[in-house]
Image 1 (spheres, rainbow, N blue to C red):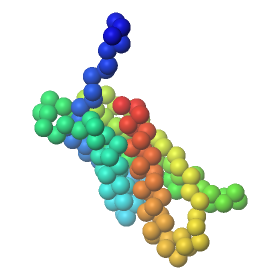
Image 2 (tube, rainbow, N blue to C red):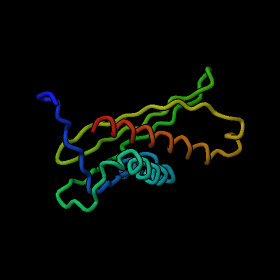
Image 3 (cartoon, rainbow, N blue to C red):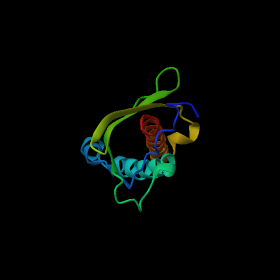
Image 4 (cartoon, rainbow, N blue to C red):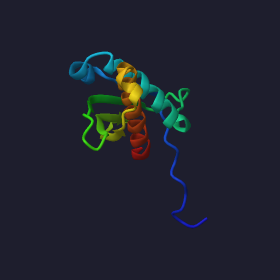
Length: 135
């Protein structure tokens, strides 16, 4: 092994907390509830290798969702959706933002709530991947 080529120590996270209070104030429910559930699951999946619930010295990852913007479908037949927030781990904070593209299907017009929930779930997964890369 060459000098300076040692692998960085693995990130350890004791717990993940998702705060959607700012989103609740902005968008209300069910959007905030969908985001909380979807983001919690997406973060667990994206960070599974880093989770160490038995490690009392590992910090808790706190993720706050500040806003979700579901864009209108434009003339090109798609919408740009955005999620904004922040994450804190071990006293270090970072801003987060993820963008996804939504193309409606004909069934979305009759299943509007399911379509909206799907858009929120897709944004939550994108945010979890963004955070995973930043950590």
